[in-house]
Length: 179
Image 1 (cartoon, rainbow, N blue to C red):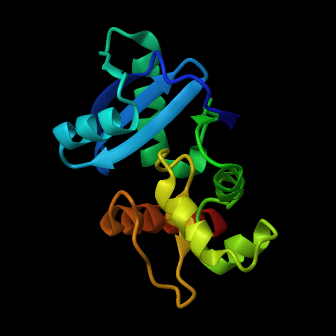
Image 2 (image 1 turned 180 degrees about the vertical axis):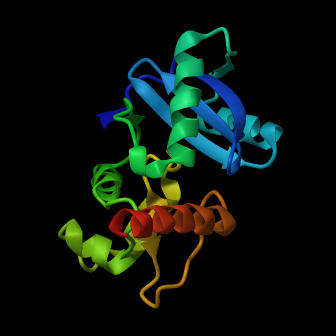
């Protein structure tokens, strides 16, 4: 993951996925946003709130079309995650949490407390949850793999139903892989 440096030249594209509409925002260093919703206009408002200078691109923009195809593939088959160029913006703590999230194997989950311990900050459970909530890169920074201590699903920026669907898909793949 590369720290996001430039707010200029952010382009975005939307398209359908197995989790509803997906928006992919691309900057000069890589993907800066992957957002999920059922409403394309809500996604466009969200990207403009996050990146006010962003502009819509289309299928004729090869890099955007390729990014959308890669992200859609990640949504459909998260176990076959390609190495996508990510350009993230966050605090050093958030970057540490997001890197730790990317190390969680597909089909596995951890609790917020376990994730805090993995980054050497066992007392920072709430801060870890806050970093997960601030994640702008749905699926490729898999905050959906973090659950409560009792095993239940907690809030997910893109909706608990999407979190449940992603985890079910990943668990089914993992079970088939072992079988």
